[in-house]
Length: 492
Image (cartoon, rainbow, N blue to C red; front, top):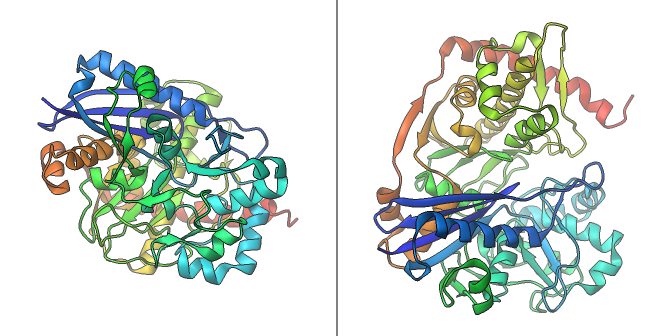
């Protein structure tokens, strides 16, 4: 029996999936790592924590499964986009990586909107925002010149970990689309936007561009000792977490839709072209010729994690209590803008809020308000998609950790008025494992890998009466946002 390994780096943990050639998941393992918040609006992670988590999760996975490292044919990594690692010429980390939820680069975003909006819209197909790598790097250059002066290599999250495994310096073109200095029309680094960093596109600062399924290198003897893998095991370049989730969900044809409840929330539709819009993030699909433009809300499952970590409790206990609270939380409304918001506001100054608190509200009310507030934010995202008129099916595959909760999934189905399909496994780590399996010849095609490795397990239907009720509550949700926005901008 041959196996492949897929490893994801999410907002707070690394998850690894060991996939057998018969489509069976042999073992799964997760190792958490911290995010630091050194100042309000800032979010950083230490790249060395990612690699430590990699070594631990692989070692525990091999021990748990009993699989010999020699049976692993290949592995692939994925991670959230935008997160750059700055190193010296010897790939030594110079500072913590600015995570994509960080909003410190507001001034740089304003500069890009004023001076380079036409170039960015034409080449990048996104709007400037604090989530992108370019404004983050401009902030470092301006505020930490001593770090910028020492920077000789830029890597992205999964690419840094893979460099530790193989010694390569490459990235894939889908990852590059998340940098805001990549020209999607030419599928190459943008001379103009890279010039803002004071760098040419061939000076060695930026990684070489390859395809996600290309072999980037092999496990080195040092990495073999640290992880337990066999030296010489092929490592694919890999790609971004969202496209791997979209693939793992089975969304590989135009019109198919995914709704993601993870650290961030996303609604993505598979299309045959990009849809440039201030409301959308456009990325190429893993399937050649396809795209998966989507809307996004910044603090989705991150809202629940913040709530849980701040006020205590276990997920199931909190969710069970929330299920007993009536829809609308008896007037309590939550806005999930913990780090500003993307669709439809593109406003890093928005803040999270609970509004309408009464003496009778309990912790269970607040928990359900978090679930509903995130669902309303996702409805904002769906409304933006409807305005752009992207053709899509009326069902969607629910993906991400939050989608595993029946309570939250039902609330989301009711708020959106959509049927939500749940697959047995749609984790990005499974998508990466299937990609590795296809590249290694375990599966003859991506479609075959999907057929062998994935299946539908349930459907959540919306309740028409609750959908009507939530439509009324959504108007209140929007009115509160409109009322508070001037306050967050200091207009009072």
